[in-house]
Length: 329
Image (tube, rainbow, N blue to C red; front, side, top):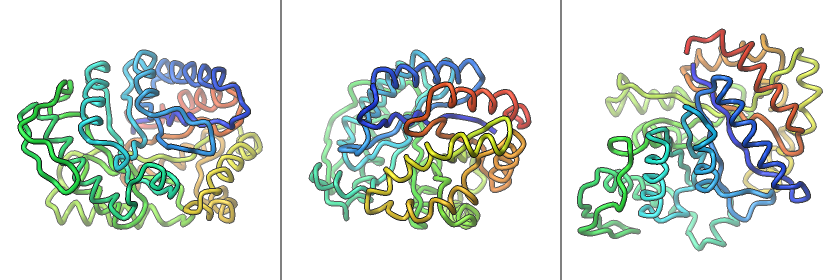
């Protein structure tokens, strides 16, 4: 089992962004020193929270992340030209000496599609073609691509990635078609662990395995990452009391987007039945359940909007010292 943190760099607009970013960078350095395996950045445009952009944030984390893998969790690929992504990510891969992971998704917020002039109905087709072109460019060979959205003919990438063939591409998605698509389109399914249906992950992993088997990829080595809401305290009572207001505030902020409006009405269900929050024993048990489903890389958000830095740091410390040693690495 590997462990990572989601550098959830989104903050209420009244907060001091410089202070908060400094706290985040300190936390990433602390996680690296504590034996964590990865750190991932996020991506949104025109957000209702102060949200620095993912490529810049990923670059900033390279020098303070030790040996951790660094990636995007996730880059909304339909909003970018794949030539731009290919060269930016190849640059990051070189700077990190091969520690990069490119996590991508198709997007869901209507305001982003409207503002960026992208037809939401085309987002899956755009993502598919973008991934095809990324992989072609990352070979370092001359590309002959004439697609529906992009044309790159008789051109080579300006900087080749450090990893042969480019960084692994992890594809996020929560709907059944997205889960099945990730089995054949990407190198891993970047699973979200916050469905209000407590049995959803069981169903989703079955969909994913079915699609892998159908594609003849069931026996191929494949990482199985998942993003979960996780917080560890000295006792279950202390953990739940400490973090609940911060988790609630962030979920309520997200619920202002129509596509996530359910998060407000379903918050108590998520809190009681889905999130992994409690003592080291409780957290280890929750991770054990994920491991039984086949997941082998748990990535968690170490803080939510408004949470003081010392609280998130203590949870990260407890996971490193009291939970991670219980799992083979």
